[in-house]
Length: 121
Image 1 (spheres, rainbow, N blue to C red):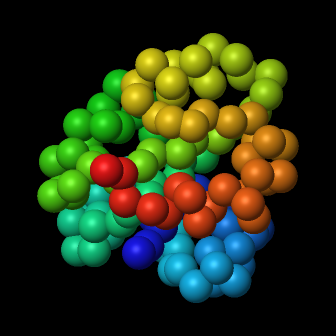
Image 2 (tube, rainbow, N blue to C red):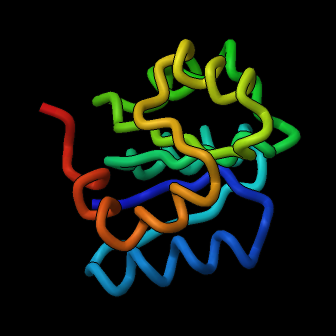
């Protein structure tokens, strides 16, 4: 099982990657949506984590882009700034679940990542 992370923040990705490795999973960073689609096409992930601050993210296309390249829809988890409530709502409306403020995502990561990496039944 693998995790694909749309994040151009190296320090934040390192936190996600280290947590995944501790749990026996792998995580791969994609700095752009094009890279995310290419990586997902080559190795379909069980979980995609989206940093809503990524400048290449187009929420209106996100789920279709993932469906286009993945034979099975992975769980899509999104996180963003708590002050950007509109963006968090838009991510929920796009189909991301869960959608968390960055602080909640960070605190939940060690306990929730294993669950997020389980295939959706």
